[in-house]
Length: 416
Image 1 (tube, rainbow, N blue to C red):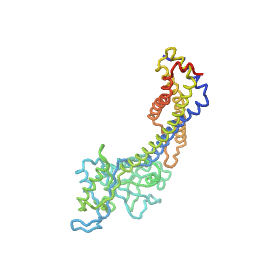
Image 2: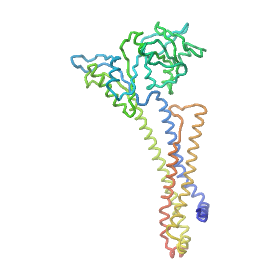
Image 3: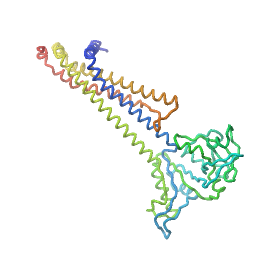
Image 4: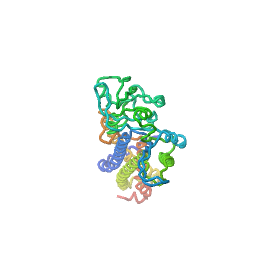
C-alpha cells in the first residue's frame, strides 16, 4: 500500500531545498552517466577491434624456417619442408586438432590474364577446410570442394578486385577461364572477404585454387607452404600448437630445443590479450564512476543530516506520539533512496540515450571511426546500475536515519 503522507513529506523536503538537492544529486547523476558512456564507448572500441579479426579467433598458423641447432648429425641452417604426409600425420596422431588446412602461395612475378586484360594478383592453393579458419562470403557459384582436391581440378574462386580488373561490367564470370602462368583455370565461384581494414583490401585481390592443383600444375608436388589449424571445441589453441610443432620436429629430425625451426602464430592468445585489455578498460570505467557516485552519496548523506537537524523537533513530536525508531529510519532512508534513485535514473537514461544516438548515426551512415566500432549498452549494466542506486541510496541515508532514530523526544521538544 502506498503511504501518500510519507511521499508528500519527501516531496516537500526536496522542494524546500531544490538547489542544494539538485547540486548534490548531480554527483550521482554524473557517476551513472559516466559509467554508461565509458562502458558503452569501451564496447564500441572492442567491437571495432574484434571486427578486424577476419580469421577464427582460436586459429593457429605454423610455418617452417631454418634450423638453428645441429641434431643427429645434421647441420644447423637446414630448411624444413612441410609435406602432404605431415598433414596426414597430424590428422592421424593429434586428435585435439579439428581442422587442418594446408596452404601454398604461388610465388614469383607473374600476371593473371583474361582475353586482353591482365594484372598481378595473389594466388593461393587452399583446401575446403580454410573456410573454418578464414570465413568468406561466397557471392556466386561455390568454393573449392573435396572433389576438386581429389581430382586436382583447375578451378578458381576469385575476389572482387579480380572481377573489377579482369571482368569490368560482367555480372557473372562463372564458367570463364583465366590464365595463371600459362595454365588455364575455370572460374567456379566469386567471394567477398569478411572483416574490415587493410586486410580485406588485400583479400579482395586473392584467387583461390585447389591446393592439390597448385602443387601439380606449378611444380610444388608434395610441398606445403604453411598450415592453418583450429582445435576441437573446448581444446585450447596452445595445446595443438605445441603438439603439432613437436610432431613436425620428430618427423623432420629437428632438435627439441630448436625454437627457430618452426614459426607459429596463436590467434587465441592474441585475442585473449585484447580481451584482457578491454576488461582493464571496463574496470577503470567502473572505478572512476563509482568514485564519482561515492562523492555524490556523501553529498546526499550530508543533505539528509541537515534535514534531520532541521526536523529535530518534528522527529521528537513523532516519537512522543509513539512513532517507532524503524518508522523514523525508513522515512529518512526512503527519502535518500528517492534522491539518489531519481538522479541515477536520469543519468542512466542520459548515458543510454547518448550511446543509442551514436549507434544510430554510425549505422545510418555506415561509418567507423578508426578502430572504434558500434557502441553498445549491456542490459546487465542497467540492472547493475539500478541495484547500485538502491544500495547507495540506502547507505546515504543510513547515518542520518540512525541519528534521527536516536533523537530524545524531551530534548527535541525543548529545541528552539
